[in-house]
Length: 389
Image (cartoon, rainbow, N blue to C red):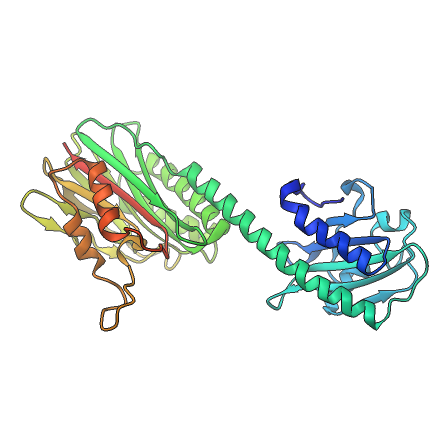
């Protein structure tokens, strides 16, 4: 078995390898190989082979349009090669194994080219129409299996990355009771995150954000934004200035990325928070006798207009009051009931679920029970509750 850039774990590759072995037997071939299109869409990387016992390090990366496999990928149609030479086959492993004839077909799933499948014979052979039909059918099944495995691996990688970046236990801050929760969506992860950190001068920083998109890419971008925001928070006291610099960074280094973020800071005894919001939901504040959900102006999201002036708003947190930050997956809940607004009255339900009479953790549980319950989560949910004790 040969694998390209990184080894595929046995339990992950077993099904695909089994399918590849069956394909080789079906075509009565000596070798069968899969090459996958790389992220740049300009070259093919050797992924998996049977019938070849050489180390993957000897396998050759094939530029699109060059060599046998590159030609199959470029044309996106079957190619038959009766006689292998150094001029028409770039992979030295095939030549060193005495492969004389090749048949290759593109690997396509949902009209997207993901690579090339080819079989080879050590005896000179002309693959015919029946062979092409059988290999094309096998390629469809393999392409589907590979894409499904890639989605599973990406989802797992995104989940691990996201979990590593979200603090499961908030920092301990005198006079504050803090609780957090993250609920992943069904199917694919997004770029939601929260953050709570102390700064060298004793100030407390709180963040809630949501990168537009799903999957591993959104999680990676989220990690970069989170790190950059922390760095700017060390250097600038004003939340608006932090978001302005963060916006410039995203617009330049993460072209095409979009995100909503709200960032706030507070000095001891942490009763006055200064917030700036880039397109994110404003914080909800619930006290003994009042409930408020709109003190902070939500300005343009990150990645749209990096030169847009930003403002900072003061939010007071009276003793016993509760402050809540969240992502839109919590309040934008679809009921599916005819006659209702497509976006449920989530904000009103959130205000109703929060109370100043219980702990931050109990408030988190109350909110989840009231707004999520047993529903299928269509979008990630991040939740941060701070109670002034």
